[in-house]
Image (cartoon, rainbow, N blue to C red; front, side, top):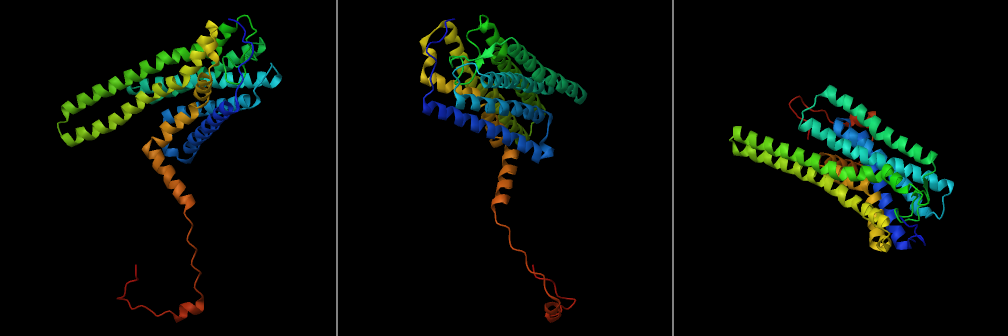
Length: 327
């Protein structure tokens, strides 16, 4: 794979778009974590997994923001630090995204019990934090992370393109897990959707009442739409980085196309914002509570009525036992 000369330069408009994507993703991840903290009754096991995904996305957006803002020119110490943080957070985000899909599959299709899902949660923590951490520490220790001339990134640092085994480390620090997620996510969610559709048909057969069947169909149709959107959004966001990775391996000059660079920057940084749109703004119960909270904060509080003085109380006419207080 030839080294890129000269490096891909980000124009101010491209940098502004990617920085805005980082900010929106960080805000979306923060909002997801805030809803988890505000309403304990919504803390289902799946939303707990979503909390850890939001933590990884928040760290990823922050590290990418610094990298795009700096637009590194060499393998400085902050380039290596930023590359290590983004590598860990990005890889962890892949693992947590697949973990959520696997949890939903085991809970819905395999009907896993509480004790089993509890052990599964610990396994998710060990894998989703431990494997990315081990890979990142090894990459830093072997001096594989550094300046990449933005041909496989958008201003931030990743795998040093001067490393002889750079393709292997690009796969280990992200691309391998990204490619596996492209396959795993659609398969799991299609199996879940197929199971929901089959359960709906069986339930409709034993419940001939049309109103109940119609209500069930409406609920399952909403769930099916969300299940389809999850892998679809993930692939639409991440595919551009894979396209540039392949173009870099082929030595194609198309890797520097401005459209591809911007789509790559948005796709890698907007995961937290996309999850926020799906699980906050497109989830009715969370959206309703959030709107209610905003209305309560924005509406002015009525002034408190002054306490009546004793003299005023003595002048107030007494009610007879048959009179009722006015409402």
